[in-house]
Length: 407
Image (cartoon, rainbow, N blue to C red):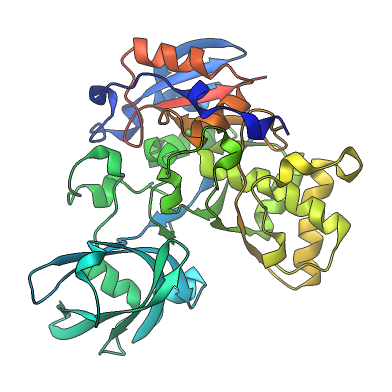
């Protein structure tokens, strides 16, 4: 399999620290927009984005909301321990998790772990004039993370309220700064709704209500799905060949009406961000699985990392048939929303099925996101990045944007 033998060192470029945007610009839709169309590169401002899109197209957004996933506990010895929430354990459903009262369990990363040898961590907090005690207890290891139980002594308070009171927003590590109050607003998209991410789907940070209204005025159909961005999005590729890199799993939910709308648009879409890309493209492979076995569980619809590259020509179906299979599946199981997960890696050699245009920021050297972009523009990523570097574009999460139209 050729894709697995890609050398990550071929996907590097010089990114000076001063080109990494540490803070967003004052007006989010005034960021620069690089436009790549049929191999040609130009630039504009983001609020002109609707002018470049075809009337009647479907644009898909990831409506996940970043949670205040970092909780700090101070031990009696004075040691500061950070517990970073990665993924819900009990209950495992994100929506139910944030509504829990009194007890819940998460898979977490623990900072300064060597100082937490035994016992529980505790901290008191004020909520609505009442003091309550939050306690964290380690239950064991879970892969590279820790299984941690949280208990609090007030059944009237939901876990979502506790996070709002004591949690800290986890901004990307490469910003090399502390989280500030302003990040609570600027590191969320204006359309964020469903709590669960530990990193923002940053391509969406440029959109304002004004730009969304302009899209509507241009006859662009809008739809939302949810992929909860995990900390694995920042995981560097350490293996020489990408075949040695293990992709992280991320949880997705896609509503029936989104699938119906996709079908009405001939299973074609403009994706806002790489997380929307990963979700949309995964839908095709889920539809293929259902073609082979209609009786799978939602968990069995999970797309494994290399699955797209192992599909034989006889297994391939049309993209519209794949979406129809998912709709039939929801109908058979009396479901309104598909809840499952994906581990898909999109790299050169991948054939895009659904996404025809992509709005995305500028990604780190030697990252899986750069591989995804390269696959989308048929290997022409260096022309785009050279232009951005030569024309003072700002990079990474709080940086500028691009619109990629390969065909």
